[in-house]
Image (tube, rainbow, N blue to C red; front, top):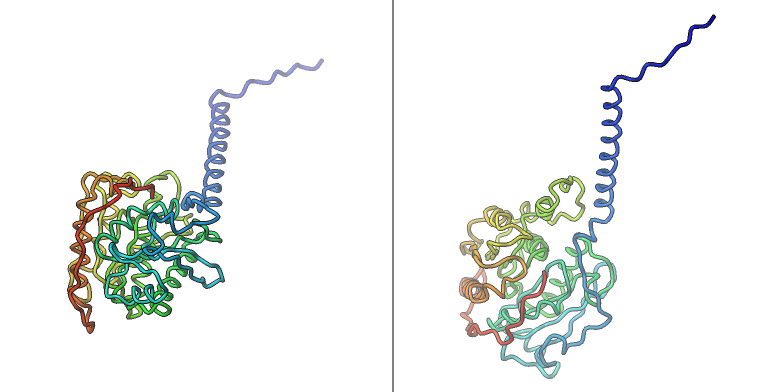
Length: 344
């Protein structure tokens, strides 16, 4: 006669262990899925272009005699669109007038914007610089505004060099007149271009950085501390690595309340820059106590005006080695529109 056998239930500890392993496997799988999604779609998190089919000159908020439409051909055949905005009080009606304006002695600020919108969003920034007696040249990145293509760090850097080459070689603007300006992500673009130009022996007149990061990887890790951002990020904009080789005069402005790019990141980048330019001008850092990331001109307009005014005066009155300089009269600092600063 067979003896009936009854299965003994698994020990409670073994059952709990299997459940815990399954739970861990699900969580790890979900985390790896999120990591994979971040790696795949990371550029959609970095770049936020506003697209338009056409951007007319009147959308610059100026008359056609004050703004000139510009185009530049990129290394891979794209046509990028931008503006040349004349300093306050300057007009150019004929082609000869425009040529004379290009050959004036005024500073030309080559403006690199942040990661969102398009150049029309920066009208208030352009007005500040124009009111300070400087011309502004501003191009949208590829994929922004009416421009074709898709932005990547490598292509944006190459496009920045194409724009510089167009100004210097086609428009005959002397490098000693050009001041690079980068805000937020544009600070990474401007720092890379400035460093490359300094290394090549053709430095810009100066570099102004506002609300920018030490590197995009560091900024990304601040917002996604639970992701391996430093391992995954393709477009890194590593200004911290480049700025020690930047020999042009430097001005940095950063909001102490910045929640997008922490104030400490801007200070870290500033600390890594040479103490003085090749011409002996000390680097300058201006803290903006009331400013966050996107409201700099709204909250600290007067302080920004004063800082940029003083910087432009210092770089025009102190020539780079071997460059003859004449004092230039800067216009008074009065904004006209009072428009709110746009998202960066």
